[in-house]
Every structure is written in structure tokens, then in C-alpha cells.
Image 1 (cartoon, rainbow, N blue to C red):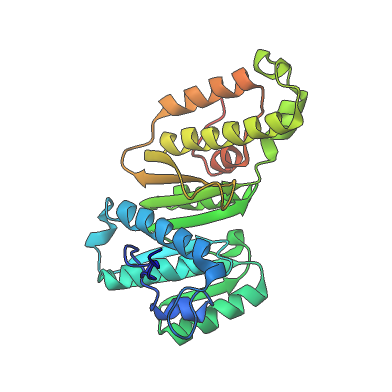
Image 2 (image 1 turned 135 degrees about the horizontal axis):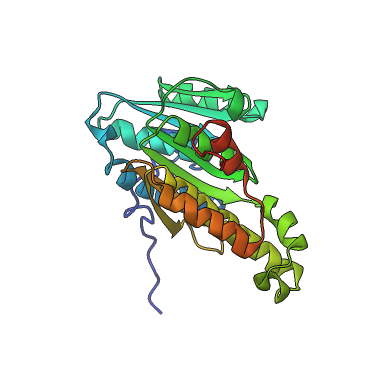
Amino acid sequence: MTETKPHNRDKNYRIKSDSPFLQALGVANDAAEIKPNKYAKYRQICRFVEIFIERIERTQAVKQKRVKILDIGSGKGYLTFAMYDQLAKAGLNPKIDGVDTRAEMVDLCNAAAQTSGFENLAFHNMKAEDFVEGYYDAIVALHACDTATDDALFYGIRSKSKLIVCAPCCQHEVLVDLQKSETENRKFISHGLFLQKQADLITDNARVMLLRSQGYQVDVIDFVSTEHTQKNTLITAIKKNKPSSKYLEQYEAYKKVYGFGGIKLEMLMREAGLIHSE
């Protein structure tokens, strides 16, 4: 039997295994090879940055002297570093801030940024709502749990960011309403797991409607294979048009049909005067 020769498994990926930040974050070893137990994470990084760069290129941000990105809930910074790396290689002079409430992650990422020579990449130990640094061209929030996703979306909407990229996680807010709902849609679903899945879909679809009401062109895609994570939905929104009340009317009808009172993003938009109470 002919022996299969090893091949360079990263040859078709946008980020090469010898990128210094991969070693700084422990994804690659000292020989610039992806660690076997990090290969799924490596593919996830490459897939995300492929989507992100394609979306940012659709905006006017690429014509600027500097592109500013805010990553909310940045965690260990895998994707934050990947964005910086690719934007810098594209000559777009990135300025990226990551915000996370875990001090140990922030310290690790700031040290890795220094090691990687990423001068305009900084991480901050605080809540997203306490981080006020003005306008960002793109807002990113991956697996921000429950209503933290709404906080991130609102930050982008309020500042009229050109691009918002979000992977929602652990949507529990609507579930409480569905458990008490007496609508026709509710009475046919008795199993708790199915009800949770429905709550997830209803929540994310509500977010899409509210984004569209503010002039965003929205796409919903599979981020990575479900073998790596069940939370693989990615919402991307590009600012294209003026706000439209049509989507707010649809949203109000949607709430009545499915029997839920609203989501945090709606509340934040009302408080900011982006939705007017009747």
C-alpha cells in the first residue's frame, strides 16, 4: 500500500500557519505548525476572517486612511488578532479595540499583541456598555451570551457603524414569554428543547428586523460546521439605506403572532429615540 505523504494543510487558508500571532496565542507551535488540538479553532479563525474581509470590502471603510474595529466580548482574541493581521496586510491601517470582562484574558491578549508587533491593537477589561470611545467602522460580537448580543448590535446601530458582525449565543429572553404564550403557534410545541430552539430563531429574526429598520442590509449564514459548535449562526449587517418604518411594522406584527413582548435591542432603541412609542 502506498504511504500517504503529509501535506501542507493550511495552503488554501487565508492565514498561514507561520503568522506570528498564532504562536503568541498558542494555536501554532514553535515550528510554525498548527497544533493538532487547535486545528478546528484555526479553521474557524480562517473562515471568520474570510467572511469579515469580504463584508468590510463592501463598505466605504476600505477607502479610508484608517479602519476602526470594536470587538465586544473578545475572549482570548483569536478572531480579533486575525482581523488586525488581515487588515494590516491589506494596507488598511487598522485600529482595533477588544473589550472583555475577564482580566486574565485581557492581560494575555495585550501581551500577545505586543509580542506580535500589533501596535494599534488593545484590549480593555470592562463591560461593553462602559466602553465609550466613539465611532467604529465595524462592531464584532461573537458568542456574546443572551442580551449581550443586543448590547453589541445597539452599539453599532447607535453609532451608525458601516458593518456589524454578530454570532448570537444562549438566547433566553424570549423563552420566558413563549412559556406563557397562548398563541396558536405555541400550543403545538410542548417539548422544552423545541421551545428553546424556537425562542432562538424568534430572537435572531427579531434582531434582523430591527437591524433592517435602521437601514442595514442583513445576511444570516452558517459560520462554522455544527460539529464544532451548535451556535454557528452569523448575522452580518452592512449600512446601506435610510431607516424604514416598514420593518418596525413587521416587527410589531411578528411579536403578536408569536406571543412575546419584545427583546432588549428594541428597548435600547426606544430609549435612544430610534423607535417611537405609539
